[in-house]
Image 1 (cartoon, rainbow, N blue to C red):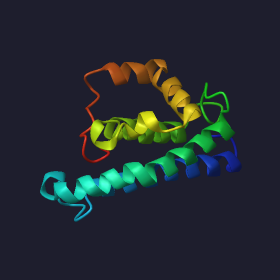
Image 2 (cartoon, rainbow, N blue to C red):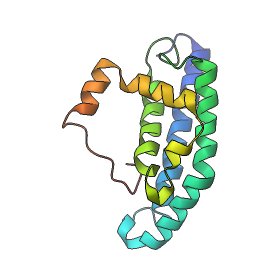
Image 3 (cartoon, rainbow, N blue to C red):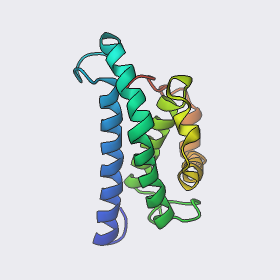
Image 4 (tube, one colour):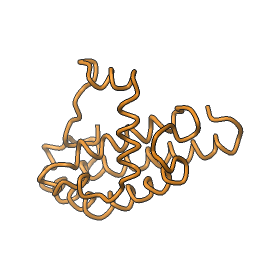
Length: 149
């Protein structure tokens, strides 16, 4: 937990924004019915997720870029002095964005995103010893490619 109510509130904000981003991205893969699998709504899902990657994802990533710049300008450490749930929630969200939307279908949306501080911070997070070990392990399941999961 971050120290004190102000930083806790800010960490909650980061975590909730990351969750909202994931939910909106996931919805783009299931635009007809969230309970219906991607393959059964594929035509609509490709249209919706392509629109998300082009229009909404840059807005979200731009927001996260500002947050990281404000909290950790050098992008070389945790957002609140030591790693918190907010760091892991944001890492998970941007890792999902890179994995799901950095394909030819989405015109390499992650690569094209002009968010250098966010990308540097994501790389820093991925280099943390225990997280790097997990990411390289067989315990980590691959991203679905069609759901932000």
